[in-house]
Amino acid sequence: MSDILNKKSEIDIRAQEKKLYLEYKKKLSQLRKVKKEKEAVGQVFTKGLLPLYVLYILSLGETNGNDISHKIGERTNGLWNPSTGGIYPLLKRLEKEQMVVGEWNNSKKAQKIYKITQEGRRQLEHKKYLLQDKIEEALQVFKIVYGDLYN
Image (tube, rainbow, N blue to C red):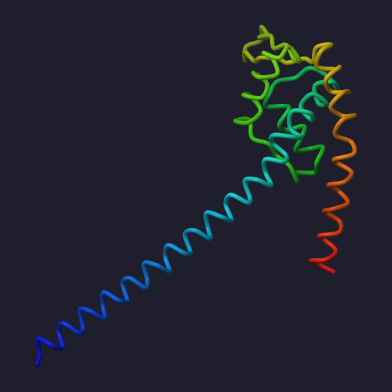
């Protein structure tokens, strides 16, 4: 009789383990989905607006990558603080595309100072023009969604 009870107990434990494992997999999947959604929202800024805004910041005056990150944070009242880990690869790409030029300064603290080129200014104006309607539409959508969710 005890063998039968032990086997039934083992079967119950395995069933509970399987149930817990399936719940774990489901929760993990949900967490991954949330993470992907957050990354997608973040990419709107990093992939779309960051290159344009970096060109804008450089149109105000030459500076280094660290300062670009800080200036964006200041201008957005701390709501958007891009990491320098995203700024420097972007600057390198913009350099290859001849939109910015980076030159090492001769101070004690050697820094690469970036300035916008004529091509960069042209691209800034062109992309501002192309994206203006899309940014305005996005703002309208955000206002509607915000109103629906929080009013």
